[in-house]
Structure formats: C-alpha cells, structure tokens
Image 1 (tube, rainbow, N blue to C red):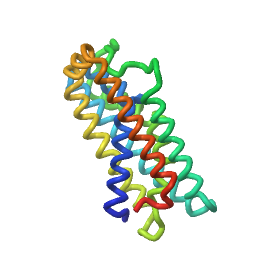
Image 2 (cartoon, rainbow, N blue to C red):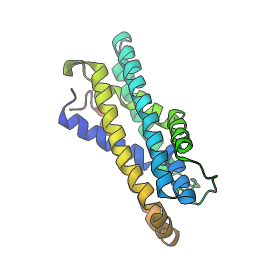
Image 3 (cartoon, rainbow, N blue to C red):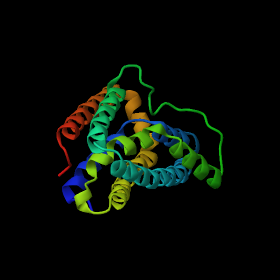
Length: 211
C-alpha cells in the first residue's frame, strides 16, 4: 500500500483538483444556487459515484499499462506534471467563467439529480485526465498490488473532493454574496492555487517516486 507521505502528497494534489473549477463544481454550485442545498447534496452523491466508477476503471487500466509498456512510469510522470501546469493556467487565466454566477436550471427530483450528477462526473474529462496523468507516478510495484494502490489513491481523491464539494454546496449562497462584493479575494485564491499547482508539478516532475 502507498506510504503515508505518498498519501499526503496525493491528497494535496487532490485538493488542487477540487479547487480548480470544472464541470462537476460548476454543476454543483449552479444546482445549489438554483434549487437549494438538498438538491446540491443529491447531485454531489451522484458526482462522487461517477468519480468512483472512473477511479476503479482508471486503476485497472493504468495498472495494465504500467505492467505492459516500458518506461510508462516516466512518461506518465512528465505527463502528470504537464497536466498540473495546465490546471495552474486554468486557475489564473484571464476571462475565466465565474464559478458563483447564478445559472437558471429546471427543478428536478432526487433520482434525477443523482443521475445528472453521476453523468456529469462520468463525462468529466478533468477527472479522467487526473487519474491517467497523475495517478501512475504515485504507484510503486515494491509497495504491493498496483491495482489496489490505484484504488487506495482514488479513494483519497474522492474523499478530499467530497469534503470540499460538500462545503461548497453548504456555503454556496453565502460565498456567492461574499465574492460579489470582494472580487479581490477571488483573484487572490486563483493565484495562490495556480502557484501551488506549479510547485506540485515541479515536485512531481523531479521525483521518480513519491516518497
């Protein structure tokens, strides 16, 4: 199984993924602002179920690739670093779509909300790319089954993102009102996140295995 240090670094990367606005977070915030916290939580349950399916599939696929392709670890290591740099750019680029702007959405029942959340996550390229690009450098054959290492790391990512998204759903209304009058806070958050992702990308590119 992955070491404690590996899990901590991967948890930090997972938090960076959660902080970078993408389809899942846009959907959850929009649904919460338009239909309320309960609807946001049902949507969140669907999103994380979709992420779980991706995590298990990625663990199986990445394991097969790492065992079959020479130099796959190194190739995916640099690919993961490049992906983190792309996330950093998405965080700081000008004219990015505001996360907390109201978007009218039709009211839906619990089952429909769960299904829409699952579909949003399952079709989210950001999550799939994260697993394919960032997962492999944290998997070490000397630590046991690659598949179960992938599942464990996937569980860490899902746990971090679930906690973060739940906080966002619970506080979406208040955060939207706060940022509407304090845009400097949003800009500062974007730059701090971008710099942090660059630092993590450098760490990933220069470390053969996460310790």
